[in-house]
Amino acid sequence: MSRQNQIVAAIDIGTTKIVSIIGRKNENGKLEVLSMSKAPSKGVKRGVVQNIEETVNAIKSTIEDIQEDSGLGFSEVFVGIAGQHIKSIRNRGYINRESDETEITRDDIQRLIKDMQRIPIDVGEEIIHVLPQSFIVDHETGVKNPVGMSGRRLEGNFHIVIGRVASARNIEKCVNRVGLTINELILEPLASSEAVLTDDEKEAGVTLVDIGGGTTDVAVYYDNIIRHTAVIPFGGNVVTNDIKEGCAILNRQAESLKTQFGSALGDIAPDDKVVTIPGISGREPKEISFKNLAYIIQSRMEEIIDAVTFEIQNSGYYDKLAAGIVLTGGGALLKHLPQLVKFRTGMDVRVGLPNLHLTGEVDDDINQPMFSTSIGLVLKGFEYLQNNNPKTEENMIKKEVDFEVEGIMDFENGDDEKTSSKRNIFEKFKSTLNEIFAENGVKIE
Image (cartoon, rainbow, N blue to C red; front, side):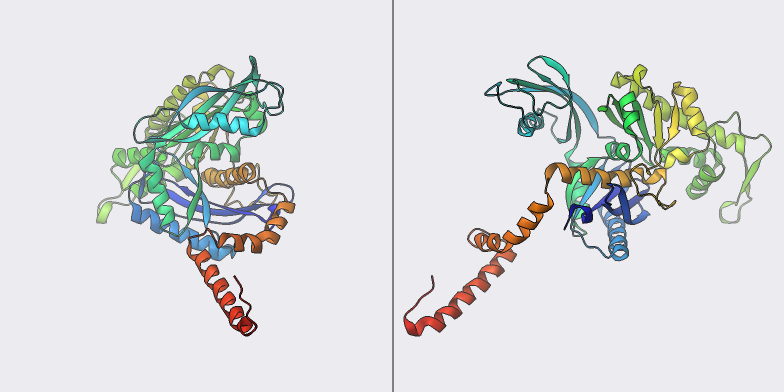
Protein backbone atom coordinates (compact mmCIF):
# COMPACT_ATOMS: atom_id res chain seq x y z
CA MET A 1 0.00 0.00 0.00
CA SER A 2 1.44 3.37 -0.99
CA ARG A 3 1.26 6.25 1.46
CA GLN A 4 -1.17 7.93 -0.94
CA ASN A 5 -3.67 5.12 -0.29
CA GLN A 6 -3.10 5.08 3.46
CA ILE A 7 -6.24 5.77 5.48
CA VAL A 8 -6.68 7.27 8.94
CA ALA A 9 -9.76 6.87 11.12
CA ALA A 10 -10.59 9.09 14.09
CA ILE A 11 -13.26 9.50 16.76
CA ASP A 12 -14.27 12.81 18.33
CA ILE A 13 -16.00 12.06 21.64
CA GLY A 14 -17.82 15.29 22.42
CA THR A 15 -20.39 16.36 25.00
CA THR A 16 -23.22 16.83 22.50
CA LYS A 17 -22.14 14.54 19.64
CA ILE A 18 -19.79 11.69 18.81
CA VAL A 19 -18.25 11.81 15.34
CA SER A 20 -16.37 9.04 13.56
CA ILE A 21 -14.48 9.92 10.40
CA ILE A 22 -12.17 8.22 7.91
CA GLY A 23 -9.99 9.94 5.32
CA ARG A 24 -6.96 9.68 3.07
CA LYS A 25 -4.49 12.09 1.50
CA ASN A 26 -4.55 12.70 -2.27
CA GLU A 27 -1.50 13.20 -4.49
CA ASN A 28 -1.40 16.89 -3.54
CA GLY A 29 -1.36 16.18 0.18
CA LYS A 30 -4.96 17.36 0.66
CA LEU A 31 -7.36 15.40 2.84
CA GLU A 32 -10.23 13.54 1.23
CA VAL A 33 -12.96 12.63 3.70
CA LEU A 34 -14.18 9.18 2.66
CA SER A 35 -16.98 8.94 5.21
CA MET A 36 -18.21 10.64 8.35
CA SER A 37 -20.99 9.79 10.78
CA LYS A 38 -22.29 11.46 13.94
CA ALA A 39 -24.55 10.36 16.77
CA PRO A 40 -25.97 12.15 19.82
CA SER A 41 -23.67 11.91 22.84
CA LYS A 42 -25.50 11.09 26.08
CA GLY A 43 -22.75 9.56 28.19
CA VAL A 44 -20.29 12.48 28.16
CA LYS A 45 -20.34 15.55 30.40
CA ARG A 46 -17.96 18.48 29.91
CA GLY A 47 -15.72 16.38 27.70
CA VAL A 48 -15.41 13.49 30.19
CA VAL A 49 -16.97 10.04 29.71
CA GLN A 50 -19.42 9.38 32.55
CA ASN A 51 -21.55 6.58 31.10
CA ILE A 52 -19.52 3.86 29.40
CA GLU A 53 -22.46 1.94 27.92
CA GLU A 54 -24.16 4.91 26.24
CA THR A 55 -20.84 6.18 24.89
CA VAL A 56 -19.97 2.73 23.52
CA ASN A 57 -23.34 2.47 21.76
CA ALA A 58 -22.87 5.87 20.10
CA ILE A 59 -19.31 5.04 18.99
CA LYS A 60 -20.41 1.65 17.68
CA SER A 61 -23.21 3.10 15.54
CA THR A 62 -20.94 5.73 13.95
CA ILE A 63 -18.10 3.24 13.32
CA GLU A 64 -20.48 0.80 11.66
CA ASP A 65 -21.85 3.61 9.51
CA ILE A 66 -18.47 4.75 8.15
CA GLN A 67 -17.20 1.20 7.61
CA GLU A 68 -20.32 0.30 5.64
CA ASP A 69 -20.35 3.60 3.73
CA SER A 70 -16.64 3.56 2.80
CA GLY A 71 -16.29 -0.21 2.41
CA LEU A 72 -13.07 -0.01 4.44
CA GLY A 73 -12.15 -1.86 7.58
CA PHE A 74 -9.70 -0.65 10.22
CA SER A 75 -8.57 -1.64 13.70
CA GLU A 76 -6.81 1.51 14.97
CA VAL A 77 -8.17 5.02 15.51
CA PHE A 78 -6.97 8.41 16.70
CA VAL A 79 -9.14 9.83 19.47
CA GLY A 80 -9.49 13.31 20.90
CA ILE A 81 -9.26 14.10 24.60
CA ALA A 82 -10.47 17.23 26.40
CA GLY A 83 -12.27 18.01 29.66
CA GLN A 84 -11.75 20.26 32.65
CA HIS A 85 -9.04 17.94 34.02
CA ILE A 86 -6.64 19.00 31.24
CA LYS A 87 -3.86 21.37 32.26
CA SER A 88 -0.56 22.47 30.76
CA ILE A 89 2.81 23.41 32.20
CA ARG A 90 6.15 24.61 30.84
CA ASN A 91 9.37 22.82 31.59
CA ARG A 92 12.99 22.90 30.52
CA GLY A 93 15.43 20.04 30.19
CA TYR A 94 18.88 19.30 28.84
CA ILE A 95 21.21 16.50 27.84
CA ASN A 96 25.00 16.46 27.56
CA ARG A 97 26.23 14.76 24.39
CA GLU A 98 29.44 12.74 24.13
CA SER A 99 31.01 14.95 21.50
CA ASP A 100 30.47 18.44 20.16
CA GLU A 101 31.82 17.38 16.78
CA THR A 102 29.01 14.98 15.87
CA GLU A 103 25.71 16.31 14.55
CA ILE A 104 22.59 16.50 16.70
CA THR A 105 20.06 13.90 15.55
CA ARG A 106 16.36 13.22 16.07
CA ASP A 107 17.38 10.56 18.60
CA ASP A 108 18.89 13.30 20.77
CA ILE A 109 15.60 15.20 20.69
CA GLN A 110 13.72 11.99 21.54
CA ARG A 111 16.00 11.52 24.56
CA LEU A 112 15.04 15.00 25.75
CA ILE A 113 11.33 14.29 25.21
CA LYS A 114 11.60 11.00 27.13
CA ASP A 115 13.23 12.87 29.99
CA MET A 116 10.23 15.22 30.03
CA GLN A 117 7.92 12.20 30.23
CA ARG A 118 9.53 11.38 33.58
CA ILE A 119 8.91 14.69 35.34
CA PRO A 120 7.02 14.38 38.64
CA ILE A 121 3.27 14.99 38.37
CA ASP A 122 0.36 14.53 40.76
CA VAL A 123 -1.00 11.08 41.60
CA GLY A 124 -3.72 10.03 39.15
CA GLU A 125 -2.36 12.18 36.32
CA GLU A 126 -0.44 11.34 33.18
CA ILE A 127 1.42 13.25 30.49
CA ILE A 128 -0.53 13.35 27.22
CA HIS A 129 1.75 15.50 25.05
CA VAL A 130 5.31 16.82 25.25
CA LEU A 131 5.51 19.64 22.69
CA PRO A 132 8.94 21.17 21.94
CA GLN A 133 8.89 24.98 21.77
CA SER A 134 12.52 25.98 21.24
CA PHE A 135 16.03 24.64 21.79
CA ILE A 136 19.38 25.92 23.03
CA VAL A 137 22.59 24.46 21.60
CA ASP A 138 25.73 25.38 23.61
CA HIS A 139 24.14 28.69 24.74
CA GLU A 140 22.85 29.45 21.20
CA THR A 141 19.24 30.35 22.01
CA GLY A 142 16.05 30.43 19.93
CA VAL A 143 16.85 27.33 17.84
CA LYS A 144 13.66 25.85 16.37
CA ASN A 145 15.19 22.70 14.87
CA PRO A 146 18.65 21.69 16.12
CA VAL A 147 18.95 18.58 13.93
CA GLY A 148 22.21 18.79 11.96
CA MET A 149 23.84 21.32 14.29
CA SER A 150 26.94 20.50 16.34
CA GLY A 151 27.13 20.97 20.07
CA ARG A 152 27.76 19.20 23.35
CA ARG A 153 24.84 20.52 25.42
CA LEU A 154 21.30 20.43 24.06
CA GLU A 155 18.55 22.16 26.02
CA GLY A 156 14.86 22.36 25.22
CA ASN A 157 11.82 24.34 26.34
CA PHE A 158 8.69 22.22 26.36
CA HIS A 159 4.94 22.68 26.61
CA ILE A 160 3.60 19.68 28.54
CA VAL A 161 -0.08 18.70 28.52
CA ILE A 162 -1.30 16.71 31.52
CA GLY A 163 -4.60 14.91 32.01
CA ARG A 164 -6.29 12.56 34.44
CA VAL A 165 -5.44 8.87 34.04
CA ALA A 166 -9.00 7.74 34.78
CA SER A 167 -10.46 9.91 32.00
CA ALA A 168 -7.99 8.56 29.46
CA ARG A 169 -8.66 4.95 30.56
CA ASN A 170 -12.43 5.43 30.24
CA ILE A 171 -11.99 6.70 26.68
CA GLU A 172 -9.74 3.73 25.92
CA LYS A 173 -12.26 1.32 27.45
CA CYS A 174 -15.08 2.69 25.27
CA VAL A 175 -13.02 2.37 22.09
CA ASN A 176 -11.77 -1.12 22.97
CA ARG A 177 -15.32 -2.34 23.54
CA VAL A 178 -16.18 -1.72 19.88
CA GLY A 179 -13.18 -3.83 18.81
CA LEU A 180 -10.75 -0.98 18.12
CA THR A 181 -7.48 0.14 19.64
CA ILE A 182 -6.30 3.72 20.17
CA ASN A 183 -3.25 4.65 18.13
CA GLU A 184 -2.82 7.97 19.95
CA LEU A 185 -4.83 10.27 22.21
CA ILE A 186 -4.71 13.82 20.83
CA LEU A 187 -5.57 16.99 22.71
CA GLU A 188 -8.63 18.41 20.95
CA PRO A 189 -7.55 22.08 20.69
CA LEU A 190 -4.38 20.90 18.91
CA ALA A 191 -6.53 18.95 16.45
CA SER A 192 -8.88 21.89 15.83
CA SER A 193 -5.88 24.19 15.30
CA GLU A 194 -4.54 21.85 12.64
CA ALA A 195 -7.85 22.06 10.76
CA VAL A 196 -8.61 25.80 10.84
CA LEU A 197 -5.46 27.86 11.46
CA THR A 198 -3.16 29.01 8.65
CA ASP A 199 0.64 29.01 8.91
CA ASP A 200 0.62 32.81 8.64
CA GLU A 201 -1.74 33.09 11.61
CA LYS A 202 0.42 30.79 13.71
CA GLU A 203 3.48 32.86 12.86
CA ALA A 204 1.84 36.25 13.53
CA GLY A 205 0.26 35.06 16.76
CA VAL A 206 -3.28 33.72 17.13
CA THR A 207 -5.66 32.17 19.65
CA LEU A 208 -7.91 29.33 18.61
CA VAL A 209 -11.19 29.22 20.58
CA ASP A 210 -13.20 26.03 19.97
CA ILE A 211 -16.63 26.42 21.57
CA GLY A 212 -18.13 22.97 21.98
CA GLY A 213 -21.18 21.80 23.83
CA GLY A 214 -19.55 21.08 27.19
CA THR A 215 -16.13 22.72 26.96
CA THR A 216 -14.36 25.64 25.31
CA ASP A 217 -10.87 24.70 24.11
CA VAL A 218 -8.13 27.31 23.84
CA ALA A 219 -4.76 27.14 22.02
CA VAL A 220 -2.35 30.08 21.73
CA TYR A 221 0.29 30.16 18.95
CA TYR A 222 3.10 32.62 18.36
CA ASP A 223 6.05 32.40 15.96
CA ASN A 224 4.72 29.02 14.73
CA ILE A 225 5.04 27.55 18.23
CA ILE A 226 2.27 26.38 20.56
CA ARG A 227 2.54 28.59 23.64
CA HIS A 228 -0.48 27.72 25.76
CA THR A 229 -3.40 25.29 25.86
CA ALA A 230 -6.41 25.15 28.16
CA VAL A 231 -9.85 23.58 28.42
CA ILE A 232 -12.55 25.80 29.96
CA PRO A 233 -15.24 23.60 31.56
CA PHE A 234 -18.29 25.17 29.94
CA GLY A 235 -19.54 25.81 26.43
CA GLY A 236 -22.74 26.04 24.41
CA ASN A 237 -24.74 23.84 26.76
CA VAL A 238 -24.65 26.39 29.60
CA VAL A 239 -26.13 28.97 27.24
CA THR A 240 -28.93 26.56 26.37
CA ASN A 241 -29.50 25.82 30.05
CA ASP A 242 -29.75 29.55 30.85
CA ILE A 243 -32.39 29.99 28.13
CA LYS A 244 -34.28 26.95 29.44
CA GLU A 245 -34.38 28.28 33.00
CA GLY A 246 -34.83 31.95 32.10
CA CYS A 247 -37.77 31.25 29.81
CA ALA A 248 -39.16 28.19 31.69
CA ILE A 249 -39.17 25.96 28.62
CA LEU A 250 -37.84 22.52 27.67
CA ASN A 251 -34.18 21.92 26.86
CA ARG A 252 -34.84 21.02 23.21
CA GLN A 253 -36.93 24.18 22.81
CA ALA A 254 -34.13 26.26 24.33
CA GLU A 255 -31.56 24.75 21.94
CA SER A 256 -33.83 25.44 18.97
CA LEU A 257 -34.37 29.04 20.14
CA LYS A 258 -30.63 29.59 20.50
CA THR A 259 -29.68 28.28 17.06
CA GLN A 260 -32.60 29.72 15.06
CA PHE A 261 -33.35 33.07 16.70
CA GLY A 262 -30.52 33.70 19.15
CA SER A 263 -27.99 36.54 19.03
CA ALA A 264 -24.93 37.32 21.15
CA LEU A 265 -25.69 41.08 21.12
CA GLY A 266 -28.77 42.17 23.05
CA ASP A 267 -28.52 45.84 22.05
CA ILE A 268 -29.06 45.18 18.34
CA ALA A 269 -31.82 42.58 18.75
CA PRO A 270 -35.23 43.87 17.55
CA ASP A 271 -37.62 45.13 20.25
CA ASP A 272 -40.81 44.20 18.47
CA LYS A 273 -40.11 40.61 17.46
CA VAL A 274 -41.26 37.62 19.51
CA VAL A 275 -41.23 33.86 19.03
CA THR A 276 -44.08 31.68 20.28
CA ILE A 277 -43.18 28.44 22.06
CA PRO A 278 -45.84 25.71 22.49
CA GLY A 279 -46.87 25.16 26.09
CA ILE A 280 -45.81 22.01 27.93
CA SER A 281 -48.44 19.23 27.81
CA GLY A 282 -51.29 21.42 26.55
CA ARG A 283 -50.51 24.52 28.61
CA GLU A 284 -50.71 28.03 27.22
CA PRO A 285 -48.01 28.88 24.63
CA LYS A 286 -45.24 31.30 25.67
CA GLU A 287 -44.07 34.38 23.85
CA ILE A 288 -40.36 35.15 24.14
CA SER A 289 -38.92 38.39 22.79
CA PHE A 290 -35.80 38.35 20.60
CA LYS A 291 -34.23 41.02 22.81
CA ASN A 292 -34.68 39.11 26.08
CA LEU A 293 -33.34 35.97 24.42
CA ALA A 294 -30.28 37.87 23.15
CA TYR A 295 -29.50 39.36 26.57
CA ILE A 296 -29.62 35.90 28.18
CA ILE A 297 -27.18 34.58 25.55
CA GLN A 298 -24.91 37.63 25.73
CA SER A 299 -24.60 37.42 29.52
CA ARG A 300 -23.32 33.83 29.45
CA MET A 301 -21.15 34.29 26.35
CA GLU A 302 -19.40 37.23 28.05
CA GLU A 303 -18.44 34.89 30.90
CA ILE A 304 -16.96 32.41 28.41
CA ILE A 305 -15.10 35.20 26.58
CA ASP A 306 -13.71 36.52 29.88
CA ALA A 307 -12.46 33.01 30.76
CA VAL A 308 -10.78 32.81 27.33
CA THR A 309 -9.22 36.26 27.87
CA PHE A 310 -7.82 35.09 31.20
CA GLU A 311 -6.17 32.10 29.50
CA ILE A 312 -4.67 34.31 26.79
CA GLN A 313 -3.25 36.66 29.44
CA ASN A 314 -1.97 33.63 31.33
CA SER A 315 -0.01 32.62 28.22
CA GLY A 316 1.96 35.87 28.33
CA TYR A 317 1.24 36.64 24.66
CA TYR A 318 -1.90 38.78 24.90
CA ASP A 319 -0.23 41.84 23.33
CA LYS A 320 1.57 39.88 20.60
CA LEU A 321 -1.31 38.16 18.79
CA ALA A 322 -1.45 40.06 15.49
CA ALA A 323 -3.91 37.57 13.99
CA GLY A 324 -6.28 37.87 16.94
CA ILE A 325 -8.81 35.13 17.61
CA VAL A 326 -10.22 32.35 15.42
CA LEU A 327 -13.56 30.93 16.59
CA THR A 328 -14.60 27.40 15.70
CA GLY A 329 -16.77 24.59 17.07
CA GLY A 330 -20.57 24.47 17.01
CA GLY A 331 -20.84 27.51 19.29
CA ALA A 332 -19.02 29.69 16.75
CA LEU A 333 -22.18 29.71 14.59
CA LEU A 334 -24.04 31.84 17.14
CA LYS A 335 -25.19 35.02 15.43
CA HIS A 336 -23.14 38.18 16.16
CA LEU A 337 -20.67 36.25 18.32
CA PRO A 338 -17.58 37.50 16.39
CA GLN A 339 -18.73 41.10 16.99
CA LEU A 340 -19.16 40.46 20.72
CA VAL A 341 -15.72 38.80 20.99
CA LYS A 342 -14.09 41.68 19.12
CA PHE A 343 -15.84 44.24 21.33
CA ARG A 344 -14.88 42.36 24.50
CA THR A 345 -11.23 41.60 23.66
CA GLY A 346 -10.25 44.32 21.19
CA MET A 347 -8.82 41.67 18.84
CA ASP A 348 -9.53 40.76 15.24
CA VAL A 349 -11.92 37.82 15.02
CA ARG A 350 -12.89 35.37 12.31
CA VAL A 351 -14.85 32.10 12.22
CA GLY A 352 -12.65 29.16 11.22
CA LEU A 353 -13.90 26.46 8.84
CA PRO A 354 -12.03 23.14 8.43
CA ASN A 355 -11.57 23.52 4.66
CA LEU A 356 -7.90 24.60 4.66
CA HIS A 357 -6.54 21.09 4.12
CA LEU A 358 -9.52 19.48 2.39
CA THR A 359 -9.77 18.61 -1.30
CA GLY A 360 -11.25 21.21 -3.66
CA GLU A 361 -14.85 19.97 -3.75
CA VAL A 362 -15.84 20.01 -0.09
CA ASP A 363 -19.32 18.94 1.00
CA ASP A 364 -21.06 21.79 2.84
CA ASP A 365 -22.24 19.26 5.43
CA ILE A 366 -18.60 18.54 6.32
CA ASN A 367 -17.18 22.07 6.04
CA GLN A 368 -18.72 23.23 9.31
CA PRO A 369 -17.06 24.63 12.46
CA MET A 370 -18.59 21.81 14.52
CA PHE A 371 -16.45 19.28 12.61
CA SER A 372 -13.13 21.12 13.00
CA THR A 373 -11.93 18.79 15.75
CA SER A 374 -12.96 15.64 13.85
CA ILE A 375 -11.11 16.66 10.68
CA GLY A 376 -8.16 17.91 12.73
CA LEU A 377 -7.86 14.50 14.42
CA VAL A 378 -7.45 12.84 11.01
CA LEU A 379 -4.83 15.42 9.98
CA LYS A 380 -2.93 14.92 13.26
CA GLY A 381 -3.20 11.18 12.67
CA PHE A 382 -1.38 11.46 9.35
CA GLU A 383 1.23 13.69 11.00
CA TYR A 384 1.73 11.12 13.77
CA LEU A 385 2.14 8.24 11.31
CA GLN A 386 4.61 10.22 9.24
CA ASN A 387 6.74 11.12 12.27
CA ASN A 388 6.64 7.71 13.91
CA ASN A 389 6.52 5.40 10.88
CA PRO A 390 8.61 7.08 8.17
CA LYS A 391 8.12 4.29 5.59
CA THR A 392 9.08 4.88 2.02
CA GLU A 393 7.40 2.84 -0.70
CA GLU A 394 10.68 0.91 -1.05
CA ASN A 395 10.48 -0.10 2.60
CA MET A 396 6.81 -1.05 2.23
CA ILE A 397 7.68 -3.34 -0.70
CA LYS A 398 10.63 -4.80 1.22
CA LYS A 399 8.33 -5.53 4.14
CA GLU A 400 5.96 -7.46 1.88
CA VAL A 401 8.84 -9.47 0.36
CA ASP A 402 10.30 -10.29 3.77
CA PHE A 403 6.95 -11.27 5.25
CA GLU A 404 7.32 -15.03 4.78
CA VAL A 405 10.83 -15.06 6.22
CA GLU A 406 9.78 -12.96 9.20
CA GLY A 407 6.81 -15.25 9.74
CA ILE A 408 9.03 -18.37 9.94
CA MET A 409 11.47 -16.60 12.30
CA ASP A 410 8.57 -15.69 14.55
CA PHE A 411 7.62 -19.35 15.04
CA GLU A 412 10.33 -19.72 17.66
CA ASN A 413 9.34 -16.71 19.75
CA GLY A 414 5.66 -15.86 19.27
CA ASP A 415 3.01 -16.83 21.79
CA ASP A 416 -0.06 -15.35 20.16
CA GLU A 417 -2.81 -17.37 18.54
CA LYS A 418 -1.78 -16.49 14.98
CA THR A 419 1.83 -17.58 15.51
CA SER A 420 0.72 -20.76 17.26
CA SER A 421 -1.45 -21.63 14.26
CA LYS A 422 1.47 -21.09 11.87
CA ARG A 423 3.69 -23.31 14.04
CA ASN A 424 1.11 -26.12 13.96
CA ILE A 425 0.91 -25.97 10.16
CA PHE A 426 4.72 -26.04 9.92
CA GLU A 427 4.95 -29.03 12.30
CA LYS A 428 2.31 -30.96 10.32
CA PHE A 429 4.17 -30.22 7.09
CA LYS A 430 7.42 -31.45 8.64
CA SER A 431 5.71 -34.58 9.96
CA THR A 432 4.30 -35.39 6.50
CA LEU A 433 7.74 -35.02 4.89
CA ASN A 434 9.27 -37.32 7.53
CA GLU A 435 6.70 -39.99 6.70
CA ILE A 436 7.49 -39.72 2.98
CA PHE A 437 11.28 -39.91 3.43
CA ALA A 438 11.25 -42.38 6.35
CA GLU A 439 11.78 -45.35 4.06
CA ASN A 440 15.12 -43.91 2.88
CA GLY A 441 16.28 -43.23 6.45
CA VAL A 442 16.07 -39.46 5.99
CA LYS A 443 14.73 -37.34 8.84
CA ILE A 444 13.92 -33.62 8.70
CA GLU A 445 14.80 -31.61 11.85
